[in-house]
Image (tube, rainbow over all chains, first blue to last red):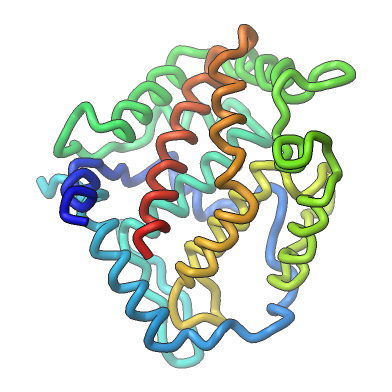
Length: 66
Length: 210
């Protein structure tokens, strides 16, 4: 795990991809309806997983703070 | 770049910068794979970049190469290349649809499974779209939407993203990328394919860590 984490920490992350691409409209598919079923109980497990993965991603997506 | 905030009942979703960038990548890839145009190329060529810790990291390199290609290539040539590769006459040289890789043909069971998932999630095709939903650009639309989260979620659901990616993208994107990279018709799109491969590899690895 430590190996993977250090490997990933050397990757880099690029912000500001193409003039706010994510603000533009969806290309082919878009959300039309509320979900048919409620989202799975985003309980503590999900939150824990979310926090955990953010740490890892933050490491290898880290940008140089100038 | 500031985080995207959307109201969720009384609590806002606050996205990490990494999630904003992931959404940007998915949006960009969707655009490149469905509707390349001069404006898109210009925005790539002009995009800011933040100095990387390691200049030769795979994602940094792939991005540099794509930006350089966007600067160097004419929009007309890119559009023509796109049509030669992915539209073709009779049959495309490289297929953009998951069913083809997963089942050997288009419009196969993987598409049916995808449609079930999309119906449950509330996704539908935009009005003018005629292609089946297992087009890689459409799948990127869905990933992007999940990464950004929506008002019904407390937080972007990583497990949901992981499942969707694993079911509908993960097992065939390398073959798609390799087909483009090996094609004699590809020029600009080789850089696109390379970026997709590197970015999706990172997505795969980080989902694995969940």
